[in-house]
Image 1: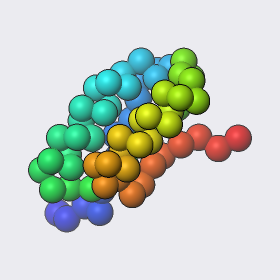
Image 2: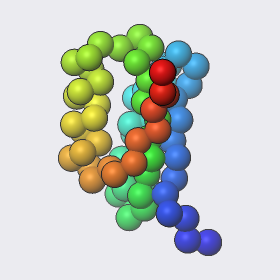
Image 3: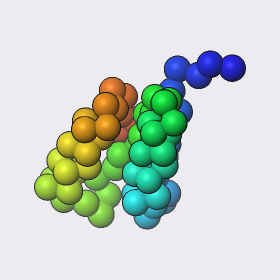
Length: 68
């Protein structure tokens, strides 16, 4: 199989953000594309911006985010 990307989700209420970020880093380190999920629950605009900046630095081109 040749997946276009791997989707990496948060736990309930954003409880596993660090694990998600670590998984995304490992996926990209191995040469695959990732589509990490983000959530605003339990976060601040500054933290979300920092997270998105880190994903940009990794070359992430897909994000899964809730719509209002």
